[in-house]
Image 1 (tube, rainbow, N blue to C red):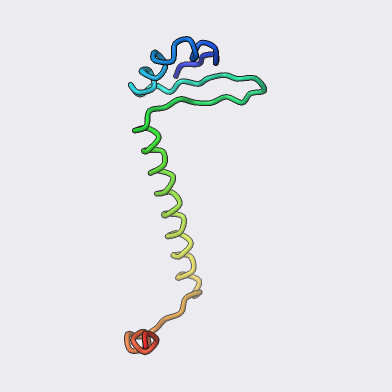
Image 2 (tube, rainbow, N blue to C red):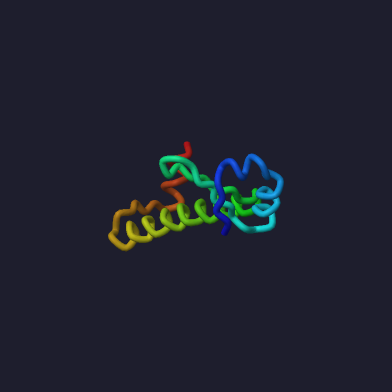
Length: 85
């Protein structure tokens, strides 16, 4: 991980973009601790995928708990077909 100043990024943007593209995050320090991180699109996509997977697993865990606690409604196939009409 590389830490640099905003002015350095402006002066050497290609260099820092190449570093990020090659898999090393670049932290850009800014005033009032409003820092940003430059990462490659591939790494960003992986982070987004992991976030969505975590959200999905959380929903599955909640559903599993509801099943264990009997907080479900059970319908037969005939009841479901009747609801369709």
